[in-house]
Picture 1 (tube, rainbow, N blue to C red):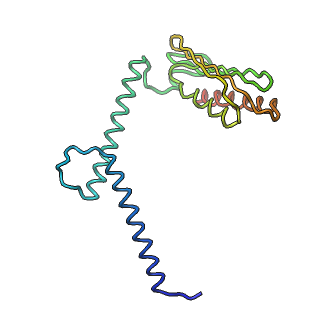
Picture 2: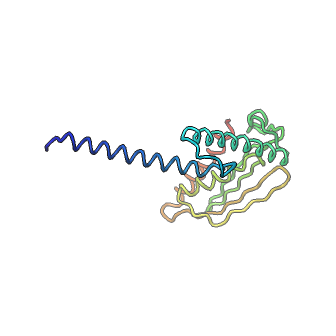
Picture 3: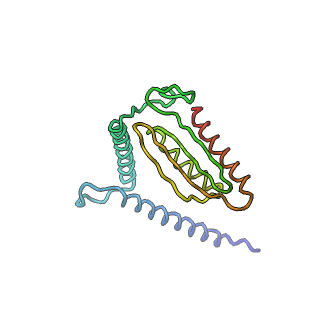
Length: 183
């Protein structure tokens, strides 16, 4: 192989040009996502565009926090540390500790997840665990009674070694709920 300095210089120039073009496209995309107050304003310099984008993101974060607080106040939930309000030993002061029951019926699983209004994410995590383990969700439903949410999920485990699969899924789900209670 022959080392040609002009060839490597050309390669570096091309790589740098491609990098600049890519950065320009990304800056343009970012700028297009930020709403502008007045379309008659002159085009902002790149640092000004980045500052405007950062300010916009901070405003969005602030608005999101305000909306979460409003949602929580409308739902009657205080936004405080979960551990200070409820523990998994059954003593609660406003929030319900999650409970899970897994019934194995051959290659079929029935998962009953009981949570408070504060633990809705646990349903999504339960579905995720079932999918990761290869279970097919047949039916999922929920009912809300006062501050308690009852989730029922029916799923079918793959035919290959259903007893091992259902036992493993059951163990993972129970561990997930126990781990959540530890916090």
